Length: 109
Image 1 (tube, rainbow, N blue to C red):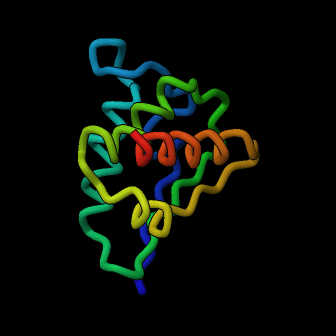
Image 2: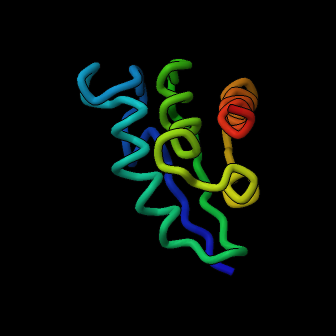
């Protein structure tokens, strides 16, 4: 089993916000395309992608929904498999809960 770790604050930006690339430099779409998709594509069945939000001072709902819900809606990842492969680490439990909610919403829709 292989784990890949990303620290959002260090590998992307400590205050990511916005949905689409046109909204700024550090958006959900950018995070999804630059970091999430390439790293998820490296994983085998039982591997994990650990997303660490330590050091992130703000993560807007549009950022989180586009980054994580967009994996299912836009990138067509299998949402159930995604829930097993993602390990969200955050000192703020609301971030993890929102990510799981956005993925589950995308699965239902």
